[in-house]
Image (cartoon, rainbow, N blue to C red; front, side, top):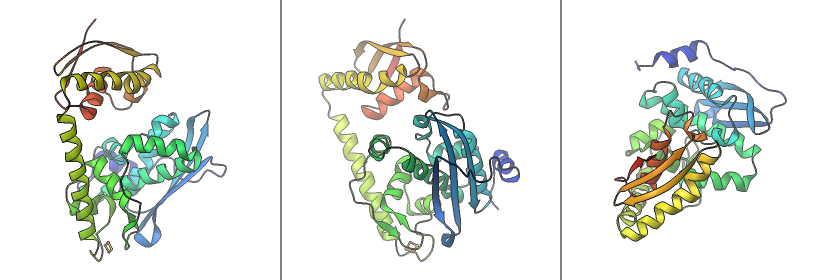
Length: 285
Ligand code: FES
């Protein structure tokens, strides 16, 4: 018997926003009835804000809970925040899901992504998703024919959730969970993904001090500052001393609202992910 959080049980017993929106502005589907579960999500969008969301699902209690909480997470939110939501955010919001049920949160993420693809200009979406999740180097192709799971779906599940084994990939995407013929291919994708990640880490560690300073400057200017300015905030770089980055901060970032991140931790996380995990951000007055 799996251990479910109280929040999962609550959303399973009292699902919110069940149903259909007849005049929806965007509709997304994920999963398939032949594979045992499916989710359809309907969105009403006005002036870039999700004003209503409903869902219909055929699946287990975790699928119902994931879909239900997802609708609550997106109603009232701007599209540019909604498209940053990942399956991990859905599972976290539920207080966690058993590993064997993580594919339900992935289904929510994929249905949302499908709906937004239909709504947003495709180039704009591709650019945003590439920036967010990293661009796979391969053409998308079906890896698991039993469940229709593609290479990109597996790649994204690895990137968002830090999966390391074939068993974890099966829990999150279902791929490999029937005949098992695709398990070798899944292992190849895992190996390729971590080889690429290691190479990127090695490239980061070979930056000279001068290159590092230039890169910190560039990321603050092109990535962090625009994000903070969306909510009237901003950042001024005052000094860099080795791994210590001294900044003056103002306001909040729109992307921090949902994650309880402080503005300082947002800056630090962004710089660590892009440049060096040893970077420490120090706020000055
Ligand atoms: S091809 Fe993936 S489980 Fe059968």
